[in-house]
Length: 460
Image 1 (cartoon, helix red, strand yellow):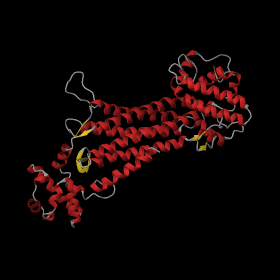
Image 2 (image 1 turned 135 degrees about the horizontal axis):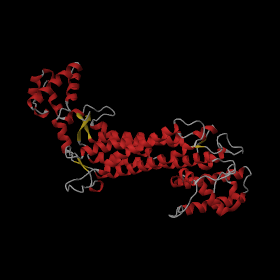
Image 3 (image 1 turned 45 degrees about the horizontal axis):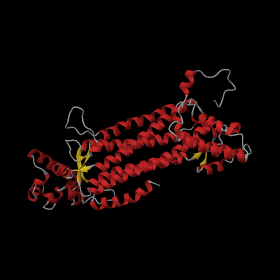
Image 4 (image 1 turned 135 degrees about the vertical axis):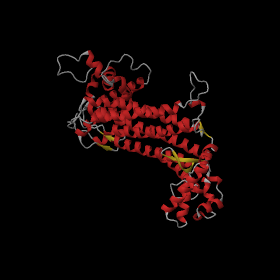
């Protein structure tokens, strides 16, 4: 059946129907479409379009359709234009002629907006749960190796020593921001559009606030034309998804490197790696590589909708049907990647001795020495020069930091005295970084405790 057609002498061609049909992807909206239509039936009763008996008959039929829709074969053979048309057809089969009243004063434009908003509210909540689970796994991994020391990097060159938990807390912060973004995306979606009609507002005196309360919305939309034209709330979700995938991709890149033979810092579990069809020795980080690869796919989904929307005149255009496939794909890939990253994190074993050795053998202590000189009264620029010369001399001699004695250090530059030799141990230098947000042991311990408390908010 069609929700339109009186204006036309002939029906659409088979090619056009096949080209424009969306049931194959928008069928996942069936539950929210039914819930929204039930609320609309109650609104129609309030304005006298439906009698109480008709409303009861329609809602009973909707509940039957919803129950049947959960069956594996429900959509088999359906040739409806979209999920909305299918639901109306099924409603008429069960409720009879009264089903023709359900679309009174309602446009598919606002119906689609409603369905998408209802679906996105649930999806944002689900994604935030997955983000919280991954964040918790990272905290567990941090606490398993609470005292491990690793080099921190800039330009992929060893820069300064940090605690392993401090490194993982950096990703915790990214995930916390991701959770906030999805909470904000949910807020943007949580606006009730029914009553907007096709673009000019409904000609029926619906109590929009009552419909909003019925469906759990916190507000009603303010402009009917905006409702018909708006996909900002979808873009908000897609941006949040792209940012979250970007963070997962960076984590994946780190761990692909750190688990390689060249680093050897960590080992990934057998359950999240794969072998080679030719080379028996291989243990490949395929789970992380797939996360890294899927990031580009999700970024593409965001870009696709941005480009689709950029030139559309107000209000609704059929181009906007192209919002759903990138939205659904991005949501699916993000959820799968978050779950996969959590399983990977749970499998990680850190070989703490190797990153500690890497820190000790390199000059990650150089900044600690320069700052110590500065605290003793040496101007920082001069301190920087002194330590730079010490590093250069060490490289020429093939001398590691720990091989300098207090006497040799003082002889090289009297400004070092005999006490700064302790800073040649990266662990000692970190103790000066107890500022909030720093890698000092006490600061990190406090940050871990605070992160545990913040996990609760990431799930609210």
